[in-house]
Length: 174
Image 1 (tube, rainbow, N blue to C red):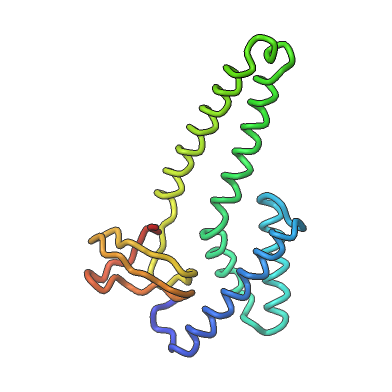
Image 2 (tube, one colour):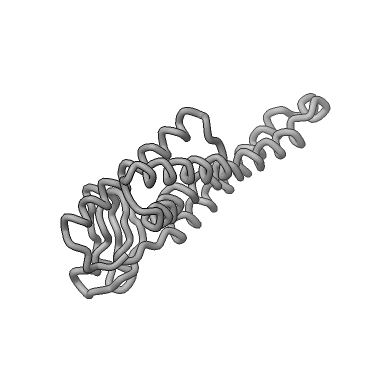
């Protein structure tokens, strides 16, 4: 999306992105859509419904899916991977014969491994979320990768170039 979109169109697109994201999150929270496939299905169904209702064009809906995949997708995949890994490790470590031989030691190892995995994914998530000017994002703080200037967005908005250095790439910060 271009930085040269009229303000009223930007506001309309930002509001449409908020509605799109809210519908997808509602589907995920209701349990109708689980995991990566459920997330993708919820986004596509929501895109089709809102595009048919005239909320936005099909192309804009595809961009909204990209933006939401960027905003929420890494967290869904991390949760699914963690659940699979912890389930597998629990199955290996918490067998009845191992329980007799040291429940506490097995549990400590499992928790340590899970903690290390969570910490590793936390670092990857911090490094992986890059935003570029012209994209739409929900409320967030972005840090310019060029000069380190922080931009605080209080609501859904188009990402503008950095006011300090005109940089166009940002990392989500907290």
